[in-house]
Image (cartoon, rainbow, N blue to C red):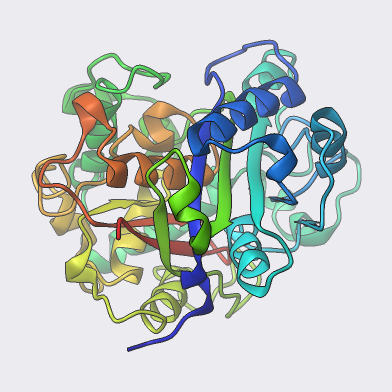
Amino acid sequence: MVSALERTAIISGIGQSAVGRRLGRTGLDLTLEAVMAALADAGLDRSQIDGVASWPGYRADMPSFSPVSIGQVKEALGLELNWYCAGNEATQMSALINACMAVSSGQARHVLCFRTMTESSAMAQGVRSSTVGGGAQRVSGFAEFLVPFQATSAANWVALAASRYFHEFGVRREQLAAIALNARRNAMLNPKAVYRDPLSLDQYMEARMISTPLCLFDCDVPVDGSTVLIISHRDTAADLRSKPVFVESICGPFSGRDAWDQMDDLTRYSAEACGKRLWSRTDYKPADVDLAELYDGFSFLSLLWLEGLGFCGRGEAAAFVEGGQRIALDGELPLSTHGGQLSAGRLHGLGHVHEAVVQLRGEGEARQVPGNPKLAMASNGGGPLAGAVLLSRE
């Protein structure tokens, strides 16, 4: 039996604010709404929260991308913290990983994890956090190698990898379309999803191209919203109001080149290293997983996650999703059960973990995966960034 320290951690509460386009609310307002929902879900009082974690922490340079600091949350709620952590130089899964380690090592008992974005309202004001360089005369960091080639958006970087993957494995756009179409079908069953109108293959194929081979429907939807998870020590489970979900395995490795465009193999990204690390920390295997909430900042990333996490072989992901039957709610491996970031809204990975908990609790209502699922996967990231968590109902 593999022993992993994170197994002493559970997700004791989940909460989500209103999610939408151009809500016109502050990041702190949305965060507090999600916090109060999570506290009520867990049956905890704010006085019991002794830890807070977030990623990437407040970004003054990108305020709509990450508009809320731990300090603001602490002051607004009157928290007395034993431990807290946030930082940009970390995997997107870092808040959850750090929270698990904090409760496992005794640094905290109940840790509040949050991720908040107000990108849609910012875009309405002409501000885009999803591009690098902007109108600056000088750029620095990794952007200085991309902006001269007009590759200012992650859409360009992911499209580069997708083009290579399409060439190497003979993939067709009709196959990739299954990711977006499946997400939309599930979003139609999710009352909180941003896009709930039907989407056909013809509409997908006719949509304007953003960066070849990625069209409009291959790109996630900027929104305003906040997601909160409360991570607690598993020996508190009996005192909770909610159904606890257990952390089976979690990881966020950092290997290979730290660049979206200069990786050793663009058709792998970091999902493969993440898969190896994740499965080394558990006795479960990919075939045991009942559903997967795989990162879909762009639809193509879900293909790499399917392969990296071992759900299919190298170069087989497009065939695996083709037609959508295997990844449907009643399929072999249901994906993006809430509509994912492509249709439900870009909550930057933590929304996927939230949905995995909903499904394991059996609270998905119209979109609930049948068969009483017991094991769920959630992942986030692309390029050199990768993080994944395996969650269990028991």
